[in-house]
Image (cartoon, rainbow, N blue to C red; front, side, top):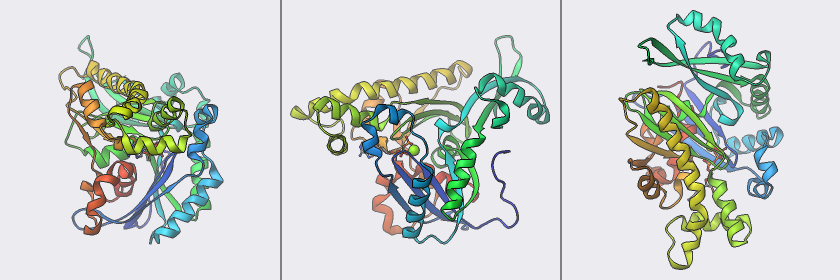
Length: 360
Ligand SMILES: Nc1ncnc2c1ncn2[C@@H]1O[C@H](COP(=O)(O)OP(=O)(O)OP(=O)(O)O)[C@@H](O)[C@H]1O
Ligand SMILES: [Mg+2]
């Protein structure tokens, strides 16, 4: 892919998968092994002030990557983890990129390459000279008139954002080898090539990403600003308590409270419903293009997927099976961490997908 740094020369045998989220940085170190890539170590560091920033809606919605702070946090985390490699594969959050599914007439890859930046002008509200353009062929379909079309995901990343990411890793003393969309990392760690179509839902602190994956490729990518921190905010406002207390309550009770706790779920359900609406939109968009291949299940990930009772609520509302993704299935890991796997799964899905990218 054009904007990714290609891995040249000797291919490293270990990588750090680095997921810089709004609320925390997650890192895994993964090494090449005979059967599955081997998870060596993992670490997570909460970003300072994430909950405080929640108090200010304007700041939350315009949250910038805080370059210096992020580089310092990375340095700290990597030192604590005692990692043995500096080679990084990192994800670009969806809110820093433009993605659009295009339907193009049949043409060669060369011709797609030639015409894609012209196409991009229609979809990307920035001068094309300031954006790195990439594309990914994800399928084909016959349109209403029986004409064969190819489905191509257009990916545009503002050069400014790529520059920032490179600077952050450089100042943390790490080597950025590749950048990719979170959705592609998740699809690698949670879905694989054979399965589908499934809806993948990443409920992060700041945003929820809904994608539909079929045969290992994204067919739809949607985003909602309703996410796990919306629930915290709703509880804080509704009960008139501070966000720290609200965060604790949310994690302790989730949707399972009874009696006096009932209020908690009434406060958060409207926000979960908004997330469910985004899932419905994603499934519908896919189904319109692929009426014969129904989306069979929903895979949840992201810290928000740990909300107690979320699977039942979502499956009652959507009427299809809901599971929590398990990225640990893709790697070998030390037996000591087995008891933690279920808890870590949602949080490390993106990081593991990144870590194994060059090893599978
Ligand atoms: N047990 C739990 N119950 C409910 N919510 C939880 C639980 N554990 C974590 N969360 C929520 O998950 C969120 C963090 O998730 P995650 O680490 O996926 O976010 P992020 O990657 O930092 O954010 P984003 O992807 O939006 O940038 C927080 O808002 C936190 O409150
Ligand atoms: Mg995230």
